Length: 578
Ligand code: ARG
Image 1 (cartoon, rainbow, N blue to C red):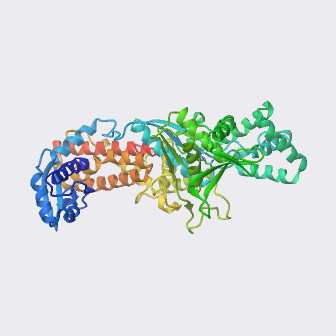
Image 2: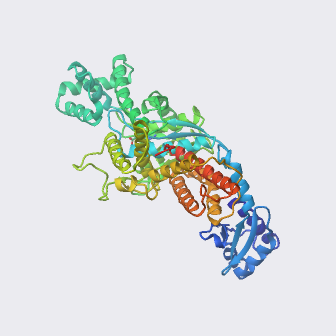
């Protein structure tokens, strides 16, 4: 609808230019906004104010000119001028009723990509081997997965890339440590604490010369493809990823083993890559190392900054891997868009890697490289999120605590659910709450992790939305009436319908900006408007005419479908009963 009005206005502006009322090079940003108070129409624009200067007329006169050249039609029932020159549009409620009717049976709920469909590689989660997933990995995992689901729902081809940290010199040390553990019969090594595993290996490395020697030797062997070392290395990766997969499953994340494309994948491509960069005169020798100088990055003296791509000892770096990785994604995977869900601290590293890849001609024109970065997760004290004793919070513990808290929250609600159903509700509420807390904030800002704000049935939370869904299902259980044809009459019905039809626009925005919080805000507003409608417009009460009841049930149905689909794009489940 917004686009529709925008288009009409844009035609009028073009005509003004043709009639020389406005300079033909004038750049006018036509904005159509949703109004807050529906008594003043459904949409409004301030275009008359924007044109006043260029047309050397009063806004009110321009508004009159515009309104005179607009006509009402099947979509717009009334156009009004307000105040100094605002133009208000009233949507034809028959048109809106029909639009909702169409959604009742549409599994896509009116969602269609407004961009050409693409092959999108999404780099997300990307934890490191033999380390516990840290907080920034949770953010990447949860937000990345929501964007992946959204892009797929729109019809794009999405390739999930779990760029795990599974390569580097630390693997010599880890292999030697694993070997030691196995020899000492710790076959059931409790790797629930991978962090400790890594730390202990490091202690051995620093204090035991024999161990250190072996570790260094294993690095060389691993890199030359030695079978024993590769087997041990694979074990480490497997132990780590089995654990992480548990977390993915609990959190309802769509990643599987098949999506692992770790740093090791690019190892064999690094030497030829350096050769190529040399040939193209991009990589030059500097103090024994190979360096690419980048004009787009300046050092403190204003000279191009160098990015090392190969160390003096021949070793490669994190940057080298990421250059090869971009090349691979463009050439082998056919990516047209690549989105990296990574900590904001990686920004410069990514920009440098992409720059090198672009200079080398690995990135075809039109391929979009995007860093979807995010801020930190903070504790209530505003400092980085830590345990009481100052340690890193383990994701597993965090999820367990969410379950415990959800159990308490739900025990306050009386219900006639079976124990099994109850368990299911607890899990869905707990995981939904943790994910939604992260998803509902603009990802670029730091956010405060606060149990009390996320596990509540009030406000912009997952439990509130899940509850709204279950509540609609209860309405259906209490009636024999069927979903009928929508006819919007009451203000509350129209407000709800107006909002429902914005689902398409919202989903498209999430995909375009990689920002799921826009969908959260949309869904929350949907639930709020539904509750208002439900209070104002009785459904199952005696005396409600059948036709009206059926129309309202249709609104219930569409609202429930949008809630369910919207939450599923966030990876959050709903329940028929709570
Ligand atoms: N493994 C990295 C980390 O733990 C994140 C990887 C991000 N992706 C990339 N292509 N560099 O911080």
